[in-house]
Length: 117
Image 1 (cartoon, rainbow, N blue to C red):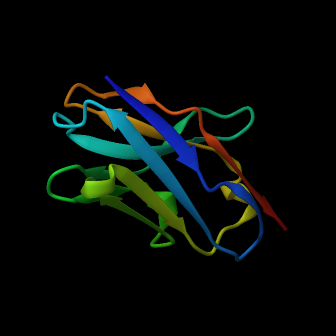
Image 2 (image 1 turned 180 degrees about the vertical axis):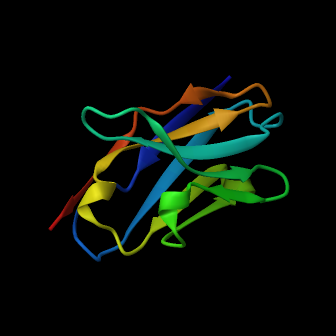
Image 3 (image 1 turned 135 degrees about the horizontal axis):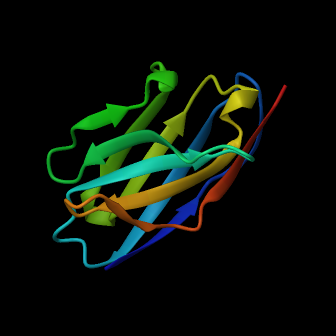
């Protein structure tokens, strides 16, 4: 079992940037991949980006379009999401999730990202 804690959300103007962090505690030796998801009001939760824990292979949703970058620091047990060229449609609660090979089944509380026009 792992515990996840996100930080770094906030309010930013359209076109701006934000960086999110997800700190992982607990059993990390069997992590397969980490991911970022988001949920906007009235919408389904959607996948944003993922990264394999050992090899660092990255995966992105098509709407990211090169604007976001996921990375990880295994020594610090931390996953990051750098978001550039933000627009109001990116406004959502961003959640970090852990996958040990059987789907994303550990979730953080989320951090709010608000992009003003």
